[in-house]
Amino acid sequence: MKKGSKTLHKVEYSVSVKGLPTPSGTIAFSALKKIVEALAEGSERVLRLALEGASMKKGPLPTWLSNSTDFVLTGIRKGSTTLEFSAPTLGSVAGEQIRQQDLWNIVPQPDETALSVLSRSVSDAERENLDSSLYDSGVLDTLLGFKRILDDDNVKISLTSKERKQDAFRLDKEAFVKIENLKITTPEPQSVLVTGFFNMIEHSRRRFQLTLETGTTVQGKIDEGSIAVEQMRELWGKKVTIKGILYFAASKKPRFLEAQVINPRQRGDEVVSTINLPLQTTEVDSKIRRVSDQSVVSEIWGKWPGEENIEDLLTALKEQNAKG
Image (cartoon, rainbow, N blue to C red; front, side, top):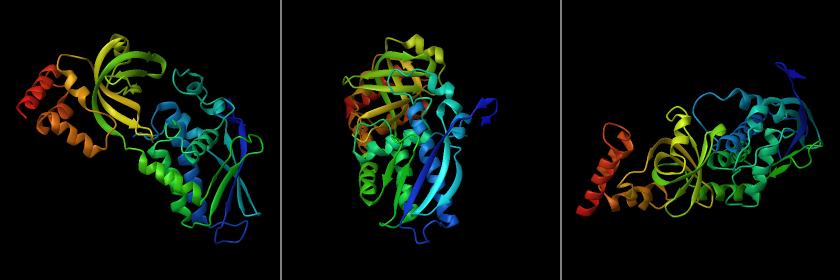
């Protein structure tokens, strides 16, 4: 089959749903719609996480991502209620994205599908791998969506493929308990202002690695709407101060930093580096208040970069800290 001018290769899958109130081999339209949406959304989020560092972003879906989760239902059969459908290989619909090399993450292979990545994500969640890069709070929330859709402890969902036996998972009461615990454990993304050493860049993917004052390294990506790609080269090998959104692993370790503003580190920025990460939002606010007056920090969040120099803002923050 072809999509546009490219040959579209597909992999056949089966999703078995046991415990539905309807007879075997049948399914209510409402349940079918929600299950299909959850599969597509879960695959979309985990694939975006693997290739872009975060599972959810504002704005319309990129074409390659919507094509990757454009699954086709081919049949329903008995033996429980089994949905048969096909998914395009990533080499067919997202070839450019997966061909790009990644210094820090394992990029999906051309013969894999979005469901291949989702299967690995569910496996990591079930094994309670707290440092996994294959799920975040957005992915976990989608997986829990299956439980909310079915709302019955006796319902079990499993995915299999004869062509790709490694693409398989099972979601049941025990799995949902583990996923719920991970969801509670994983901190929500937070707005941060951090300093560190800009020691690695990957120009093609707009990614970088930042070494914090504590020695912890964090992968990051620039917000292309706010930062020019060439600025990464100018700052490579230098100490910088970054304002952005920090994402966490279930282990509470910093996992990914989406940079909205990057400036060369200046005198006074060491005050920012005293904020220990990761913290819950209330803890971040409390920590900031211990080092300075909240109104000064609000100036930094809301106005930097603006007319004020970051050095002046942080000097004011230090002076407020000395007074406190």
